[in-house]
Amino acid sequence: MEFTENYNPKKKPIMVLGTSSGAGKSLTVTAICRLLKNQGEEPIPFKGQNMSNNAWVDWNGGEMAYSQALQAFACGVVPSSEMNPILLKPQGNSTSEVIHLGKSIGITTAKDYYKDWFYPGWEVIKSSLNIIYKRNKNCRLIIEGAGSPVEMNLIHRDLTNLKVAKYLDANCILVTDIERGGVFAQIIGTLELMKPEERKLIKGILINRFRGDLSLFEEGKKWIENKTQIPVLGIIPWLDDKFPPEDTLDLLDRKSSVTNPEIKVGIVKLPSISNFSDFDPLENEESILIEWVKESQNLNQFDFIILPGSKQTINDQLFLRESGLLKDIKDYSSNNGNIFGICGGLQMLGTILEDPFFKEGSKANFNKLIKGIGLLPLKTTFLENKITSQIKCDSIWPNLTEISGFEIHNGVTELDRTKDNLNIKPIFKNSDLGWFKENNQGGTVAGTYIHGIFENDEWRDNYINLIRKSKNLPILDKKTRSYKMKRETIIDNLANEFNKHLNLSSLLN
Image (cartoon, rainbow, N blue to C red; front, side, top):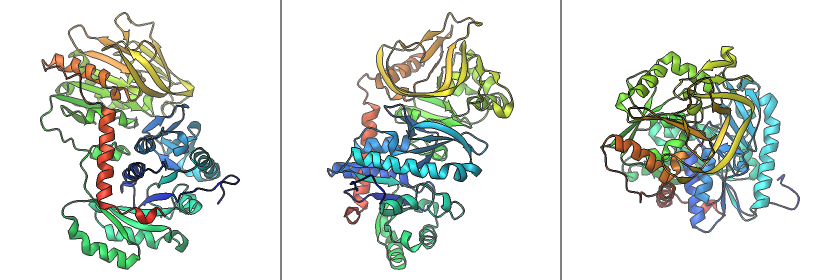
């Protein structure tokens, strides 16, 4: 092994590979992390390379995928970018922003990625492993793969599956999703495409998302074990808890379980949506129904609408205009609707978006300056360097309370001096983090740069109470259980289900 001098891992890493994207790798890692934590071990999550616009910012201002941050929470440790040393953030036209150890270092096309970034990427993965092992000498790495490990056209440039497994000599689990069908072909095909030295790393198979009586798969389990000579370590039933989505495909597949909602929220599904984990706290509110707004429609059915973050703000602003949603949003506001924007959504609510360095999608349109929706008198200029930081501050509106979260954005936003800005007010004591404006007859337009704003329970309750008051609904109980406690319960429930159905003991030696 190629670790730093005089140091080798003390505990065998466990790696979760999948027969496909969406097989359940991320949640399996999350469950194993919590199970091992509960057993007194020191698990640490790791994913060498992740492609996602659903990001988190660590305490050093480093970007990482939100799924690895969630896995860190399951381990009871503070997330850090070493847990996800390569983050690729898609920005359309087959290009991605490249982030190494939390810092943005370039833009690549899919075609050029292997040529330009493969070897630097492998070095940053090895460096991150050394940092983790130096910092946590008794830890056990719980590693997540990406997609399928045997995409034959890509395997020569695969940084995060079998290359990591072989480098660490990890005990690997192969996870497959029976809900999709074809589970036997998925397993056999994946194993057949592995080299002998790779296949021997697979120590167990996990069948995920089984509906119905688990005993009905007993014959299937025996067939798989006889055919592969690899034990089936578990069959995980279909779970209904609202786990944070891994990507936008998971997001769109979601169906709300709320049957008698008191409040209906519309979230605009932007083509380049980012940080959709911002809305998990709302999904876990029993009185709130969330619907995704994908096309022009009458928005008056919603009690409030949200403009989420965007990886390509100008492109998404043009989408709003071309789809008719921009007019719908303005009509909704003039009808005293409530609108809330987060990061890119805040920027789009302003009057002017200026992109002198082509950072936010203007290059394809050869237009460095376009008009925003115009509901807030704000001007945004996108800079060359990104702002990434954890935030702790105090809110002023809708109540005075302490806020925590994080920011990830290129743009700097200020009051547009060419417009009437007397009625716009800061949401926070730090006036650069968000603004709001009350309509004369009712309703508000507000926006903030703070991701995770709805995780702040008191702030979230007070904002929702503004909506409830306008509908003559009773005010929420101020003793509402915190979202972070709910998240811990969800992770515990996930781990408990895996504990019932997964035999991990053979992987721990």
